[in-house]
Length: 159
Image 1 (cartoon, rainbow, N blue to C red):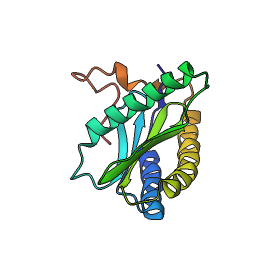
Image 2 (cartoon, rainbow, N blue to C red; image 1 turned 30 degrees about the horizontal axis):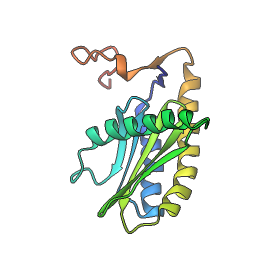
Image 3 (cartoon, rainbow, N blue to C red; image 1 turned 90 degrees about the horizontal axis):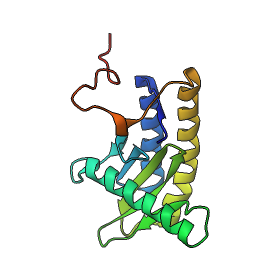
Image 4 (tube, helix red, strand yellow; image 1 turned 60 degrees about the horizontal axis):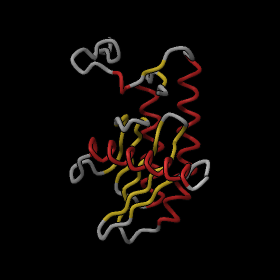
């Protein structure tokens, strides 16, 4: 399984700024950055009316299922998924090879605007993650292998 780079607080703050700008530009409700396994890395927007942890996991699963379907119909991949609802819709795309961008937006909103704005946001997020990866290219974090009883090897208190 792929791994994420070790992220500093400043890295997460920069990603959060990109997510906030995305929300404003496309009038979305919530934006999440997850790893490929569906672990929530960070989010911006409304976190009170949604269970973001479960949305991250399920959106990732749905996206990965679409990748398998792509192979079955002889496509190299489907670059994004879109779920349309009566109240809210969901757009999921790769932010980089190890992470996904999930955007929740009102059902009356424009999926085209979300897709357009998400393309710019994913480009910026990918650059930020690459910058973090270049600080220590041989060390990453696979959250799927995290021992939840002992997270000290990954998460540390600020000094």
